[in-house]
Every structure is written in structure tokens, then in C-alpha cells.
Amino acid sequence: MYYFSSLQEVMYYGGAAHRPPTAVELVAGKVGCQYEEGNLRYIRIGDAEIIRMIYSAVRDHNWDTIAPVISQEKIINHNNHFTVTYTCRYQQGEIDFLAQYAIQGNADGSVRFTMSGEVLSTFQRNRIGFCVLHPASVAGAACQIEHAGGTKSEGRFPANISPHQPFRNIRQMQWSPADKITASLEFTGDVFEMEDQRNWTDDSFKTYCTPLDLPFPVTVQTGEKIRQEVVLRLEQTFPSIIVDKQPLHFTLSETLIPLPAIGIGQSTEIEDLASRDIDLLKAVPFDHYRIDLQLYNPDWPKKWRRAVAKAGTLKWPLEVALHIDVPEQISEFVEIATAATIDAILIFEQSRKVTSQEILNQVLPKLRQHFPTTKIGSGTDHFFTELNRERLSADNLDFLSYSINPQVHHFDNQSLVETLQAQAYTIASAKQFAKNIPIRVSPITLKMRRNPNATDATSLPASDALPPSVDTRQLSLFGAGWTVGSLRNLIQAGAEAITYFETVGRKGILSKVTASSELFPAQPGAVYSMYLVFRFLLERENCLVLPTTVSNPWQIEVLAFRSGNEFRAILANLQPKAVDVELSKNLFTRMKLLDETSFEVATQQPEEFLATDYKKCHNTISLPPYALVFLTSTETTK
Image: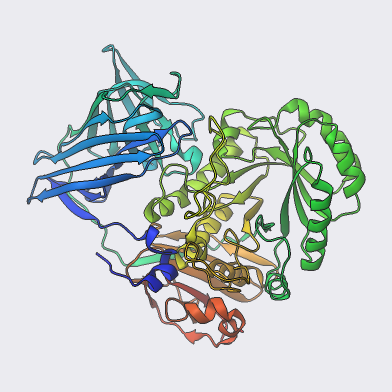
């Protein structure tokens, strides 16, 4: 267990709300797993991961996940078996659901997870019950399904991201998660099916209830009883247990790849930039500046003129996302905007998740005529899921686009870390179905900007709560480390352009100059740690990326690149404990550490932090919790 002061919590991961949960290691025969706050995670034999997670969820009519309050928790942990029992109360608005849970791990390696619940108020739900996450490493593995009627079918976990459910009507399933290991799952209490969660950048496949082809939301009545059970069995003799005890390290490829265009979004909170904001932002030569124009709103020309003025001040080309109702709205835009420097135009249809081919056929000729050198693309302003399910013809487009956020299903730090590898999967799958057309990921945010699947309007946040699109990890070391991992995975997967976050505010890379608040404890006028990541990456010209392989990408992330004769890298610790990392070769000789001891100077006086000399580094670097280190091959770097 780790105990941090509130100041440390803010620096590390944005405050107490994101404190890592206490994890208890459990053993069932030769099977190891981890229990934390009602979830069973990382069921494994040695280094072979069998199940990523088993958990139970209550999701309302808008697919919002209701956070439970856990009580009466009891953990009995023996040498080769365990029992965990606890009670969960799910309460939010009209929702009130009470459930008792029991997890039993046996000496033969089997695990039984049971839920007995009672509905305490009548409400609408989209889901109540168990979900099982299978690690994405099983992609391509064979799987046998026994259906509710007793019939059986054969299939495989999809290699490319599946737009729809690969398996339906599941009562039992059997597969091989690793060499010489055969696992089976049995489900009771509801009908289960599987979806490919890589669609939302989760690093997993999810087997869940209730099937999505049944009508939802469903009204559950006061007094209704719900009972479910999931049983995991290992059907084959276990192999020898192997645990990799190599030191943390990363290896560098000798093949250099171009750095894609990297941009940033316009602030949705701060209209006017202070002179200090302008100076700090101009020091980061972003390749483009995303603005969103709702052409069906009459005030869009005013917003356009303000955005063009800011882009001119900051000397950034524009990435313009046009949201339209009808194609005729493009005419007024081209009349006003022709003289602007626009790097890219994204076309989104307000009433659809994916822009229709009919709209594109009508607006593209006019845009091509007036912006002959501008890249024009489309896709979705939502998840990769939408584009995967409604695959747009790219024959007349310069690129396809979709957005990314890591918090569709899970919200803890470790789950956010797991999404990093899955970002690369979306690029590979998009290129597979779109004939290798360039991919532009825009924007990338820590939280969902809006819910495209909500069945009614989302209520305003309470006065004592942050807006749902704001995450305090934006200002933290963890947020910066997550950004390093996102950059590495998307760049190495071959994204043509990437747009991150916003300029100023709670979703930006700089704090606003006005007073801080208890809800979002950023220091007035400070930069966030991720600002330093972008500045270190982009302040050198003509960068080429050295693709890296990380020994444990859930513990550390690294982004390495070269500018001229100088090699540079950003190394991040993603975990709440110190780690030692071995450097590959002798490429990097100097280092600058960003941790809790330098955090205040680095974020409040970034120029002073950046001006300090780099120190000599050795073959092994000790990284404190959530720390970042900036590496270079030059003797002096300012």
C-alpha cells in the first residue's frame, strides 16, 4: 500500500480521486490473481495471462457506469486457495441496487464469482451483471462456444478489430490463452456475448450480458432479484511457471520513421489568451491548431474570426472541423474562409456518428475548388468504433479521422495505462479496411468529450463536481507519462497526424491565470507536466523517431527521436513505486528529471527548469514514482 500526502497526490495523479486502490495478491493452486475494490484482475499462471479482469457493472440508460460503495469486505487468503466476500450498493439518481458478491479460488486453479442482487427502486438500466475481460494477446486464438440451447460452434478471437460481436449467445466457452493452457468459462443468470473492446482502445475482448440486440434500456422493478455466476476452469495440465525477472529496459530500432504532424486543440473554456500564455504556447511549434465550427449555429463566423486571429498570433496552421446539418452550409464557409491558412479540413455530419457519403459527394467539390492545397478528410468525431462499424469509402478523401479517449469503460490509472497499446491497434485496423489511406487521430483527450450513445440529454454536473469532460490527471505527472505512451504507440503505428487536448484550461496544457479551485487544484498560470513533453519533442526541427520496444509497457513508456546529430528521449514511470531502468547501448549521456522534487519549479517556472543543466546519466536510471526523465546525447542542452 502507498500513502501519499495530498500535495503528492496532486503531483502524481491529480488528487485523491485517482489514488491507486489497494491490491491484494491471491493464489488458487498454481493460479495467481489480484483483488482490488470488487474486481478480480490479472488471473495468470506465471507470466501467462488467462483473464484480464472479472467484475460486475451497473450501467444506466445512458451507459454511464454507476460507482458502487463497498462494505462488509472480507478476504481469507490461504497458501493455495482464497475466499472474498463483500457487499456493493449502487446509488445514483433513481438507481438503487444492492448486491452481495462471493469469489472463491480453489486449489485446482478454478475460480467461482457469484453475485446475488436485489433492486431497491424501480429504474432503467442498460446492463446489470458480470463482465469478463480477455487480454488482447489472445487475438487470433481458436475458441469453442457452447450456446444456451446446447449447440456448439467454433471460431477465433479476431485479429483485426471486429466491428461487431465475434461470439453471441454464450453459455460456455473454451480457448487456449497461452501455450499448454486450456481455459473454460461458464456463465449463468443471463445470456452473454462478446465484443471487441479494442474499438474503444481497451486492451481486451469483453464477454458481457445482456445481448445488445435486445431492446434497451430495460425497466427493473423494486424487489426484483438478480443472480449470476461466472466459473473459470483450467482444463489442462499446467506448464512450468515462468516469471520474467529481467530488469526494466527498452530497445531502439535502427530504422528511423518520420514524426507525424502533431497539433493541439482550441480551448473550449478560455477565449482570451494572456500574454504569458501566448509566449509559452509559441515556444511549442505545433503543426496545427484544431478549431470546431458548428456551421448550423449562427455565431460561427464570430468564432472563426477569433480562432484565425489566435492561430496567426501563435503561428500555427489550422485544422478545421466543420460540423454541418446540410451541405449548403459549406457555401458560406468557403466565402469567408478562403484566405486563411488551413492545413486540414474535417467534415462531420451533425445528425450522424459517421459522415454520410451523400454529404461528402455534395461538399467535397466546392471545398476542393476553394482549398486546392488543403488536406480534406472525414470519418467520425467519436470513437474508432463508429468508423469501424460504418466504414466510409475513402476514395475521394485525403485521410480518415476518429477521436480517442481512454475512459469509456474503466477510469482507474492502471486501466488508462492498458489503453496505450490498443491505440496502435486502431491504426492497424483502419489501414486494413481503408486501403492504407492516411489516418488522422483528432482529438485525443483524457475524458470523453460527449457521449454519442446517450439515449437522452445528459444533465448538468452538480456545483460540487467537475464537468464530465474534465479529469484532474490532466495536470499530473501521470497525465504526462500517459501522453508519452500515447505518442509512442500512435507514431509507431503510422498515424499521419495527431491532435491532442486543448491549449489552456482544465483540458489543456496550461492552467488559466485566475485562481485555482479545490475541484481542479492547478496553480494559477502554471504549465502542466504534459506541456514539457510536447516542448521537448517539438522544439527541435526535422525530428525522426526511433521506434522502441519496451520490456513492460505497463510500467514504463519511452519516446525516442533524433534531430540532426542529437538523440533525445522521454522516459516515463507509469506506476506509484520507484523503478530502475537499464538504458540500451550508450546512446544517451545526459538527463533531466521531472519528479516531485522538481515539479513545482518545472510547472510554475518552466523556463527556469528548462534552462538548468542536464546531469550525467549512467547505464541504469532510477525513476521515482510517476517521474519522467528527459534524455539527450549532447553534453549541454538548454
